[in-house]
Image 1 (tube, rainbow, N blue to C red):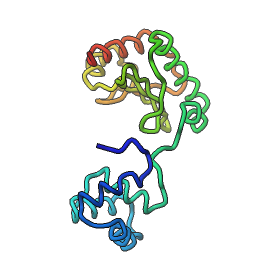
Image 2: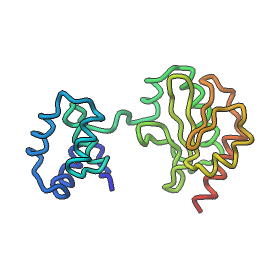
Image 3: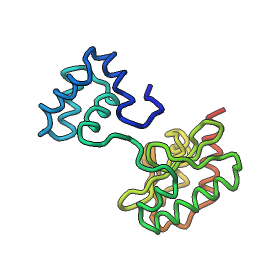
Image 4: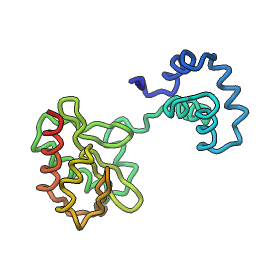
Length: 184
């Protein structure tokens, strides 16, 4: 289980315990891999030392100078980093949900805005270069609603909408309602 502390260093005691070497040893391994690309560094740790993806990522990213996995503290900070049109659309999506569900919390998780209700993540969105990707945190919910979303880019885990999407409140609330039903 990942530590609640977003710093990469939070993984170090677990890495030492699980893989039997002090961090100084692992830093020397990373020094030898300094000229390799990220995927090769991760693969090396996984194949040669049995590292989990999370532990390998923490060590590699720390060695590359990224001391924390957290990039944004608030949704507002996230919105400042994306296209203003995308930010407007995402705000509208989340406002629809938080208006209908007053107990809903808009939080940052996995460095993107997410709606959490009663400790369950029920909806999230992120901006990509060409669209906004939404997710009700359930491939089953997406599959059930796919026939109603033929005009959108529906994938297994996400729903792509145009950056300037005229937000379909009924669809958004139906997706959230279906996700909440799953959580019970």
